[in-house]
Image 1 (cartoon, rainbow, N blue to C red):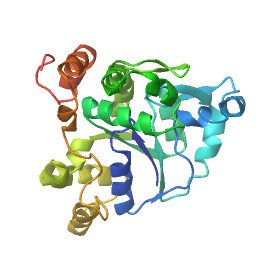
Image 2 (spheres, rainbow, N blue to C red; image 1 turned 90 degrees about the vertical axis):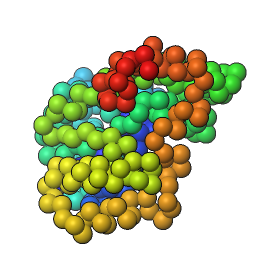
Image 3 (spheres, helix red, strand yellow; image 1 turned 180 degrees about the horizontal axis):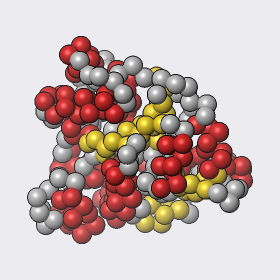
Length: 272
């Protein structure tokens, strides 16, 4: 069994990777599947090598890119049995077909879009290699940066998609037979502000999806170790966006993603 651990950036990639490791899978040393494969440092050379074929698939979430299908197939063929590779990929039938053809199961994780917007803002500020880093730092303050993280915009010669665009393109995975979609909030457990019972049910779902039969020993191992040596992930708490959103940020999130938040179960009313 080989697995793609797929996430919207800043939605809990490390949490999902930790779960799969505790279930007995090993993370491959290969770079994950994300838009940096054809962007970032030396991007012209990367694009020439990796996006030259007429047959392409889309990878990435915040700023999707087209990539040579055969190049990606060769890359995935190097993932050994019993291993997983991380990914940031919106859904497309072409990419789903590629994973299925390589007999790879997909486990997807997402998080409250508002928490993702906050985490992404801090991430882009800190990561000098991020395509939007320089343009982001030119914005007057974190107030404007967070608005861009919510609404999207043109940065660094590429388009950063809005929260709604990212999530709606990602949600296609929930209807794919070889994929399962879980929430960060359902997996994080009591130490992150969630529920132990929900964490257990979610772990069981993931285990069965990757052809494991969950037992009590497995459940205890996950519950006791999913946070590793520390008791919390950095900023890994549910609802942290409330301490950073102004009313303008909340209004922007309602305008951009109000119905989406209801669809995902994070709010009961789009005008929350």
